[in-house]
Image (cartoon, rainbow, N blue to C red; front, top):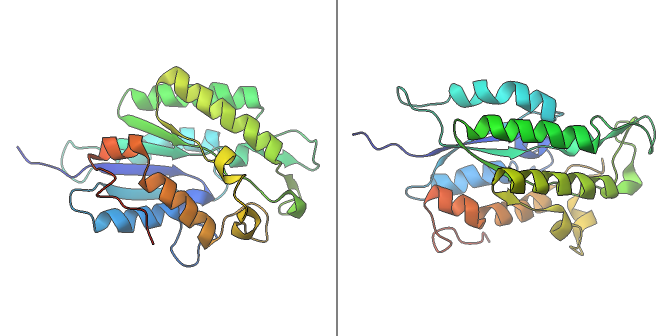
Length: 223
């Protein structure tokens, strides 16, 4: 029997793409490179698309996952979802309607988790804060940390209900004294320091390490 290296599909938005990290290409690219130099570590496919939200990811995840098996009749062993920030944006004004209400987002995420769980392991990441002073983004979209906190709670509760590993980000990152220095001038994307912070969290995430058959002694905090 041929032994295969595990494969992880990371699917999401510009955060997964790595927008803003001119040094390391984003937290996901940093993970890919780190694991590529770690014996036995999974192969990482970074599949972030700028602007993607829950609805777009729900439409594309199955094709993304199903076409990246490297051997015959083999498909990737896990999917890491990192979505939600684009669903929060309020259109036109700071109290305008969001792209998806918190209730609609929760329902859609629950359905997505059930679908993915039927075919592979799924894990989910939380959301990152914004610099509200720089709103609106692109002169039309308003993001608020209060909304981000609410939606991350919805993500966490959906994951608990579905028994899916969840990595919280917002409540920890918002407390970082250097946070505003980690956010790009556009107010929503992280720079290299912000992506490095997320990378360190992901690299030492117990659920991900267990899935990857790695230990913290093999995955040290990066310099």
